[in-house]
Amino acid sequence: MFLSRFKKFICILLTAVMISLVPYSDVSAAERVFPHDDNLVIVIDPGHGGNDTGTQGGRIQERFMNLITASALASRLSMYEGVTVYMTRSDNDTTLSLTDRAKYAESVDADFVFSVHYNACYAHDRFGIEVYTSRVAPYNAYGYQFGNLLMQKFEEQYGIFPRGVKTRKGLRTEGDYYTIISANIYREIPAVIIEHCFADGTVDAVHTASNDLFVSYGETDADAIAEYFGLKSSILGIDYSGYSDNLIAADINNFNDATYEDRTAPDLVSVTVTNIDPVSNTVTVTVEAEEADGMMMFYALSTDGGWTWEESKPWPGANTYNGTFDSSFELTLSFEDGYRPDIVIKGFNRYDAYTKSNQITFIDRFNSLDKPMYREA
Ligand SMILES: [Zn+2]
Image (cartoon, rainbow, N blue to C red; front, side, top):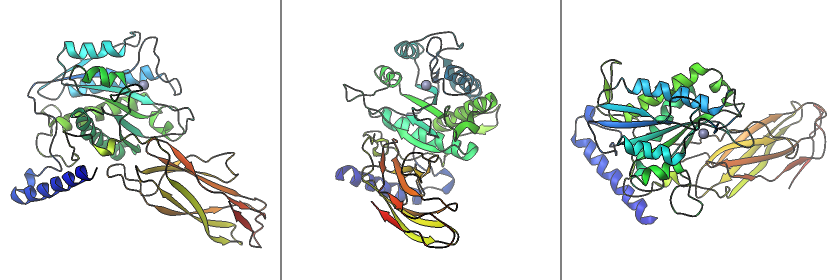
């Protein structure tokens, strides 16, 4: 751990020295880590299909959403030069195993596989875009650099929350959980899963409201892929062959710590009362968290002791790209006359593991007059 941090420090120093030696216009934000190839072969994989519908939690089944996005992606990416694009399926009736998709990628000599998906979760309360990459070097770095570039575009263009570039460990192996990733890297083909946003949540409902949006996302994917590989298109009048500010530094020889699968709940989440205004019926609380092996990403509030929860919100200061977050923040809550709040906060990390805070239980009801009493548990 210390060694890897030290190495990174040296890399930063070296980058700083190099920047001072070259003219500004040639400076990359970070080096492209994927090996240059004049004749790229890209396979676009619309997730699910046929008997496998994908999530049914959205306005339409996921297999349909994925094909709309993947088709738009493939047709726009084909407008770039030096790239041949294939799709694993082009209708919604074909059932294809994950291994067959990887075998297909191998048969066309693919350089990279992009698997197109939309997300869902049991509680229907999540939102944002995330990208899954391999745990194995150098594939881990390829997906890490691509995913960060893609999330920046989705955040800027659509206001979709960036949840991060993630990994997931296989159940009985040190390798990857997702077969579309493991079956491809077994064939030495890098692969990532793009989970564009959540089909089943209320926050992302606005981002899945029309099929036109699914088309736009595919076009944005295509531009992100083109930028990642440094492609240009005379038809589109776009040239990514120079530098890109959107590339993040990635280590091709090691696992990138920012993609670490943090399944342990945050170390501590606490809430304390900092002010009560009895006339306006408001309470100001300070929320604090400690999360040594990851980052805080969301919080949810309950004012009835945890029976019901408000929609979760991004944790203040949460920065997906560098892993930082505010260790504390203030919330001011207002209540109606006669209400007796019982305040508790859930703090979630990047992998949705959460810790519940202590509870602030009011003994008296708010009445726009007297300062209500409370106890902390
Ligand atoms: Zn899916």
